[in-house]
Image 1 (tube, one colour):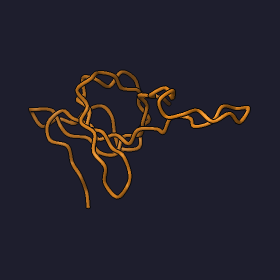
Image 2 (cartoon, helix red, strand yellow):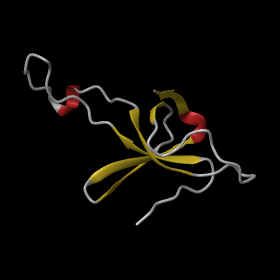
Image 3 (cartoon, one colour):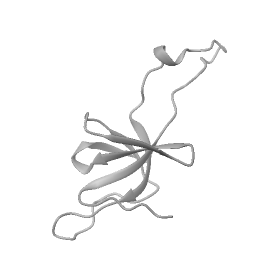
Image 4 (cartoon, one colour):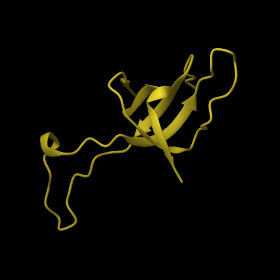
Length: 90
């Protein structure tokens, strides 16, 4: 099944937060830093139908507070407005 965002939205699979330090100390979930990095899964289009300048597989940093989270097949995903994509990591 393919999920395609509508409008200027991007579907991202967020990276998991580190659960252990390099020395092996366990970090409880309440103390873990929430990373706002992830891999692009699917991309919508602009209102005029043109393609957004990112593609599936790109590694991005995103910000903002308007992300919509959901879970599918026990995997977490997030829809982010394109304007909240801060950078592409290469």
